[in-house]
Image 1 (cartoon, rainbow, N blue to C red):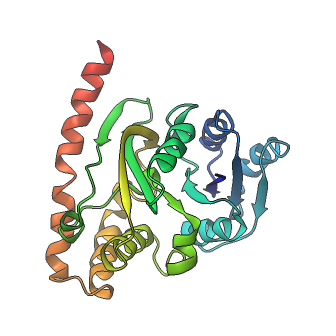
Image 2: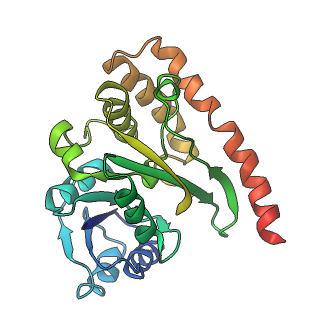
Length: 256
């Protein structure tokens, strides 16, 4: 089983090296690593180029946002399974992909495997812990979704249902996951293991973008015919409260 890992980057010189290294250290042998740069001017491109001999494909192509960059990467992908490692993030450890692939072999009928993720601040301290739950469609109807960067998705899902809606700046992943899970009812399975570390302050966690994210989420629910749309967003937010509480205790436990 080949796994295509896609990193979309734009002006992330401070973090892109960590993201790349977290993928290149993986012990699983059949990985296709694709890095897409949308026109960085801060030195990110030079960092990416320094790994050219170890990255399967590098795409330097101007785009109009993160999701166009991701879609460009998916179009290049030849793997059976696709996962995203954003330029601000890192795969949790060097055995992450190996463990996920073993889960696919144990559950050959699933279209997607999702897991747990850790949000950290600039000092690497846990701020929010996303613990997945066993998949239940009623949770999706109530605003719950897997953490996008923990989702390992068979490429045939994109071939059947399309790529990310590039008219969204932040919520295209919400629209895609809501669509394939709720409307198309793909098979999903939960792996109770930490697979990704995400830096707070990215495109979906920055305070500056919270209002836009709220508007785009409501738009998703309207477009997918999931009503009442104006209540779905608060319901989605309610699932996050416990994640910040867990972040506090995660740091305390880790310090012992």
